[in-house]
Image (cartoon, rainbow, N blue to C red):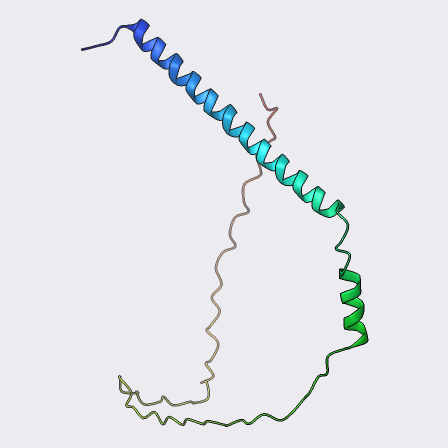
Length: 127
């Protein structure tokens, strides 16, 4: 059963309206959350520190912790593995190294000189 063009147009309009409303709601919610987080951070930074915090900090400065360095027992563990295997492919014998043989220069043959290249074409006017 085919729907009429008027019903199809109303459905398309309803889908567009719902999509637009969803987008506006999502953007508004994102802005509200970001604003709330910014306000909370600003309030935390503006609040004065705890009143007992400077006293505790000064108390640590008067009584520093003592650092004790003492030798700790240690044990050295060494593991040795000997790997023995055979090559998977036999290794071929090496070649010989010899001095290069000096060859006599090839006899020069005189050929006729090559003709000069043709002249370059004249530039065109571009049209």
